[in-house]
Amino acid sequence: MTTHSAKVRDALQAKGYSDAQIGDMTDAQALAASGVEIPAKHLTVKSVDAIPQELRELDQWVIWKYETRNGKETKEPYIAGVRNRLAKSNDPATWRPFKDALLHWQHQQHGGCAGIGFVFSENDPYAGVDLDHCAPGSQIEPWALAEVETLDSYTEYSVSGQGLHVIVRGKLPEGRRRKDPYEMYDSGRYFTFTGNTLNGYAAIGDRQPELEALHQRVFGAPKEQATTSPSTQRPPALDVDDQDLIERATRAGNGPKFAQLF
Image 1 (cartoon, helix red, strand yellow):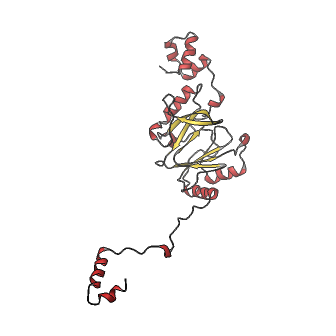
Image 2 (cartoon, rainbow, N blue to C red):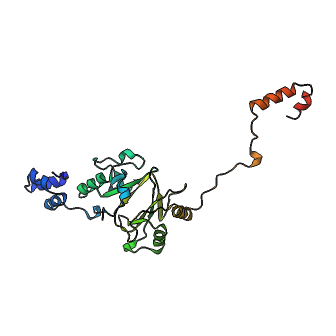
Image 3 (cartoon, rainbow, N blue to C red):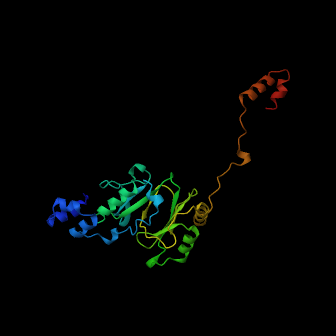
């Protein structure tokens, strides 16, 4: 027996369907029979199979919802399978398996759930590069296409269709993570996923050198750690044995002359 959302079930019951009939329906059948409409902006996952299997095998998935904060629309992560509890990109306890996130979205896309997302962690080998506002009308701008060709890894259109997300195996250098129109993360952030891939870029590649080169080109070379000049460095402290020898020497017959050296 299939479990449908409360909204779909209520609509079916209002149409006279019995609980047994509702339970025998697939999600697609129940949704069609209920007459409940799915907002177009919630149809964000274009192809489940296009999302790399190696990511789907990790328990690092969340769902997300559109929310307005300070007058701006945001995509807030929520825990899959739990009612209205925010997920945290730094708390693995709020992440779920891919199938849980996908099922939640499939059951609730006619309501508040707009999509699914993957959380980058310091314990996985992945990094994401967000190229923002680079594909107006799905026509990729030359600068963005050059970045995609250089990284040569899994690439998909963003939810808006106006940007691109590139996923690689690699870790970012220390330093900044955001400079319009670039964002790069390998932990502490999540990316929405659409499965709307760019032709020719369906697989994740090992791209450590390319990722480092991109980071340096966008954000600049990492600043060298400041060193103390020799004139301000303090001499090493004498150990106990050396200090003991000096005290003995100053107590000797020629001690006054020796003491003048220290």
